[in-house]
Image (cartoon, rainbow, N blue to C red; front, side, top):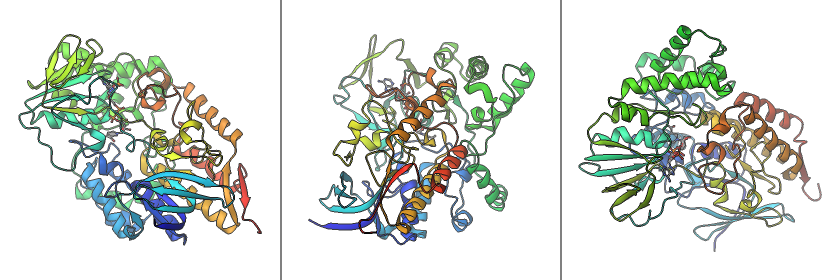
Length: 539
Ligand code: N01
């Protein structure tokens, strides 16, 4: 059995893992990244379903740490598609010469900590043993933990079936097929308009109607690209100093105190501009005031009436039981319009629940839909799932899954008490759930690399989060969300509602990326005084 001695291990070679590997290697550490898939890219390696694209504008969906990369890379569309993002991440991997330190097709299966040596011992899926001082979890908040819907018989279906989060690499044909789509979140809403163009029939099994805003994706013209490149530093300063990692500022007026004409003008201009700014640049109180939120919902409902020909179908497509923006916003092109096609049928499974999946298709209380293909766009065991699926044990041998059984506990979403020298990028209780990913992960990577550098310079063998500080951090995360309408959404992954038995709590820090940056900088400037720092023996 091979044995490898390292200073740091990075788990995952997606957006976070690649930058983390680059940073730690530049600091002179012996470091390797382990990636379970045969290629780099993380989320974008796996989520290659039809229509998959990002909903952050491309100029903000990239690394900002390298002027050379910003200058060299050119995005082709406003919202980049999965394959373009994957090309970008491969380009960065080669540009930074990262491939030689990435071990592909190899999962970290177990992680054990030895307090006498203050080192982790890891076992990999191919039988290697790795010892390391530091372990950085760059597993992402979603894609490592896709979940199937909680429906009887998913293993019985005789046709093709696919989960959007684990889409096959070989081409999938929809032509002439009868397709069932289960799930209408960000993934399902992107799948529908693409698949409907080729399929014989598409049955959309909708439980909770999403509020879908048009993305208005378009190719980027050379003038726009030139302008962005000329202003990159300013754009990125604004993105990093914004609350959501993208410089959209909410309108400072209150929706309820603004005249109907002015409200309509703002909503219409945001609807026409497209993308998530419809919600993010709207009135600041739509997240905190139900009446303000209702006004925005009413606008979306009127748009659905305009876009969908059949009034009965339009009615079923309207979200009624949760405030807009309290589930992850959905933005894509052609979603509502797809329901005007003769080959698309909306099945309201709230009114007529799915009883089981059979060999032939989907059975509801009143009908059976015969299908050739089932697409599960049923989401992920978010934030905690990618961690609890691994067998990681604390210094006293308690599995992380057990530690988080009644609720997640972290300090700053970056560390966990009892797990010294283990760090998380975009982990639970970090700002990841509401942020544009790249600035959020860059912030995490940079804090972790500074922390590891500090430990090296000061002969510190172990850094461990304080339990009381972690309790206070959890309380702060939960308190922040109580001032918003987010808890009113009862089927959201933001609060663990989508996984049976998962504690119902906010899975992120929603106080803003900018505020979070200040908080973690203060912790670093204090010499990490909130942590238990253990020196190397003899120093
Ligand atoms: O998953 P989801 P997703 N019967 O959890 C339904 C990111 N992302 O993959 O709402 C029937 O949002 C479930 O119904 P309900 C982004 O962060 C980003 O779409 O629970 N339906 C829901 O409709 C996003 O939020 C992008 O009632 C069942 C759907 O499955 C996150 O990934 C693109 C069911 C799950 O929706 C996850 O998005 C894609 C059942 N038994 C993803 N069980 C972009 O950047 C579940 N559902 C554009």
